[in-house]
Length: 160
Image 1 (cartoon, one colour):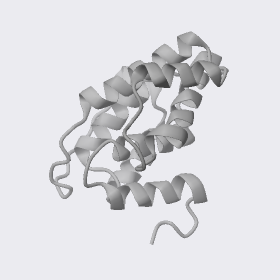
Image 2 (tube, rainbow, N blue to C red):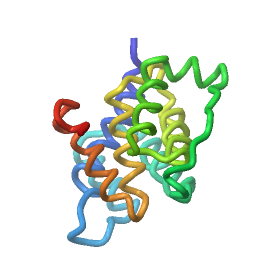
Image 3 (cartoon, rainbow, N blue to C red):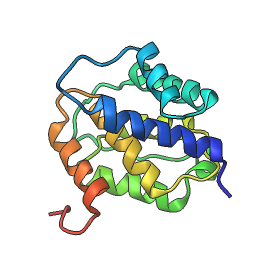
C-alpha cells in the first residue's frame, strides 16, 4: 500500500511541472507564488513543503552533464535496492543504455527518487523524475524530448 502523502508530493511536483516549470514564456515563479498557487489548488501544506524542498534539492544537486559516452558500473546499496525495485533499476539502466541519461544524471535521478521517500517506486514515478531532471539541465533538449515521448505517448514508437 502506498503512502498517500508520498503520492501527493509527486502529484504536486507533476502539477508544478505541467503548469509552471515547463514554460518558456515567462520567468519562473517565486517559491511564495508557487506555495500560494498550490494552496489555492487544494494541496496540503505538508505536501507543498516537501515538494518545494524536493525542487530545491534538484537545483542544489544538479550534476554536470559530463561525457555521455562515459560508462560506469553501478552497484546499488541495500537501502537503494529496498526502495528501488528490480524493475526500476532495470529501467534506469535502459534509459542510460539508450542515451537518455548519462551516468551523472542517473545518479541525480536516483537521489531525487529516494528523496520522494515513497514506500514503493514505480516506472511512472521514474519517468516523471527523469523528465524533471533533464528539464533542469541546460543542453538536454534532445534527451528531454525523447523522455517526454516516453512519458506522454508510451514506449511504442519512441525508441527508434
